[in-house]
Image (cartoon, rainbow, N blue to C red):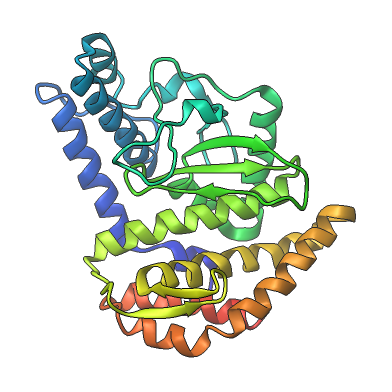
Length: 303
């Protein structure tokens, strides 16, 4: 893989996005033609999942008005809530933790766009736009364009505090994260979570089923993890290492020291995964996907 664009450009993912978007739109609006879209197929794919989750929840609750809203808004209202960024229009929201329910669809809290959704405060939208721009300059624009469409900014924290971030498979293209007032740190975490979304889509698009009986030691968790989680870590953390190396050329002061320490720590953690990673890759039966996972790991090990 000569460039990051090569790394992220896996054709089956594009087909997955198109086909699933069409199926969701047909399910929500069975008598309507697919709505015209000014966004990318990847963005449509993300937003369609929000509309599906919202419509299903409304139907279960007997809330006809909200259900009808989703039928009329297959983009879950993104048109009026989007923020222009270097990778296209993004939906940036800042729900309170109380707005994030837990349910059977996810072990972690989540947020579904709906009729009451509003954009995040202007300073957070600007922070997000700067973060997307920083990631794009480092070569990660394609990744974030397709796999970080909806950004849910959660708790504001100080540099050096633990930052929680996650994704859920039912809302692909959506990321949830704490943040500090620094676009480079936010860009790093966007890339990490978008990487998880990319790999989930890549596994689904290529039909790869990873055995859950094989476990490998994870230096990040300090425990044995199933191959699925181990491969996810050995993909997402190398991506953040590649970005951080680029970011260090344009940062100073506390952010520079913070990112330098982060990169040093990740080098140490990743080094011990090489033998197990080679074995874990044998569980990936698609050549294109396996080559991309190997390339990212190899490039990060060389930093």
